[in-house]
Amino acid sequence: MLSPGMKRRLAFDVISEGWNTYTCPGDLVFKIRPLLMRAWTTAEPGTKGNCDIFLDQHQLMVALPMETPIETNIVDPTSFSEAEGMAKESVEILSRDEVWNVYQLPELGLRLKAQYSVNSLMKVIGGIDMHGEQMYIMEGETIIKPADEPAPPPSNSKA
Image 1 (cartoon, one colour):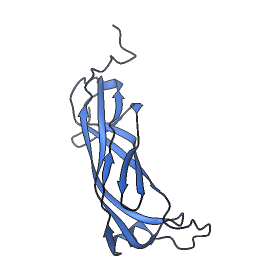
Image 2: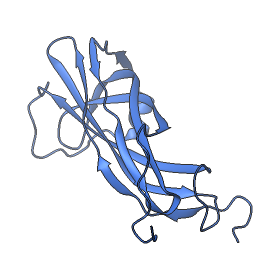
Image 3: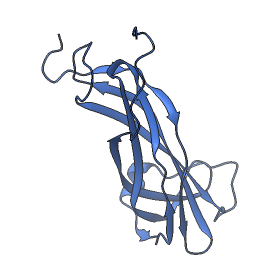
Image 4: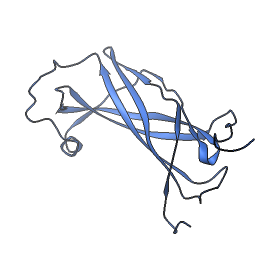
């Protein structure tokens, strides 16, 4: 039995994970791919259906085209903590194409869809990442819903 406040890891299968695309002024395009790293629950083993589920997602972000030449010997890239205190310039998002990622949680018999949506995008003035590229900071949220289609029974269950 789980103690109050305890979580346990859940196995998950990736059904689909896609790229979100954000078009900004000056032919600047951001491609962001949310990746599910871990899933947890507070439910006891054997629980089926709805229960508390926690997802740990990371976002991979690529800016195209490159605004600055890539330097191969970056001696002092800007750290995230340094970037927090630096001046920023808001970047307008002209259009967005956000996809739903779909995950199967076999133990719970659930299929979920998750979408990462960017609320704001900021250019860090003078900020350079470890690859020598302009640094940007994005803020967003992950929306999680049950998938529209019913989840198939777990593979280890008997029909």
